[in-house]
Length: 229
Image 1 (cartoon, rainbow, N blue to C red):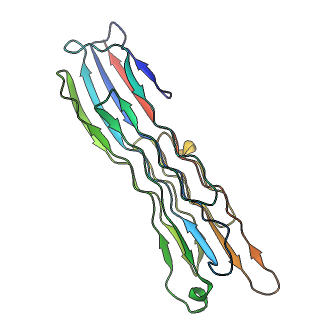
Image 2 (cartoon, rainbow, N blue to C red; image 1 turned 30 degrees about the vertical axis):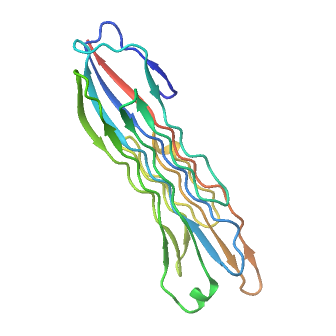
Image 3 (cartoon, rainbow, N blue to C red; image 1 turned 30 degrees about the horizontal axis):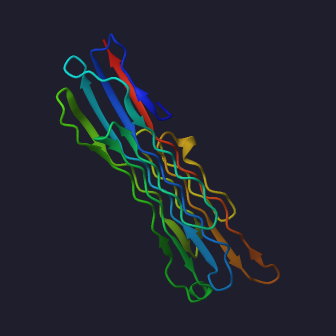
């Protein structure tokens, strides 16, 4: 299921194996830089959590059980990102979405004085939780997503953090200071979006000012059901 709704197994099914993935967070996007901040970068969004379980349909019957699919954090421009939504199976089993990264700036004086590079904190991943005690339910495994990538501000340039992965996705490429953020959807369900970065540069003869750019959106979560007769 890629959209929220109700789940009823096939009448012939005797067992169902379920996988839930939470949504990815969007990356963070710093505001347009100026001479005081000089450069800025945002961390990447965390990947969604994961939980897998099975239900013995001979022991427990389910009909029209509500399933909520977490929505990925939307792309932002000039602000911290948006957390990913939680994917629910009923009310006791869920995979939470990833959280978003922070934003940091680096003053021009730190470049001229050769101060150490600055790393920008990424988003934390979502988790999987299984709290069902009804007979017939069995937890198979649960796992966190991965952290978003660290943003970078230093002598080698600038970088917006990469997007974190879920159990069913890859990671999302980081973004340089002239690029928009990369969306999680291309990497799979639950992937976080990448952060962005920008630069205020005033060497003669050209002044470069890079405006805030859209961060990468997080990918939606999913619920997958394997039915066995």
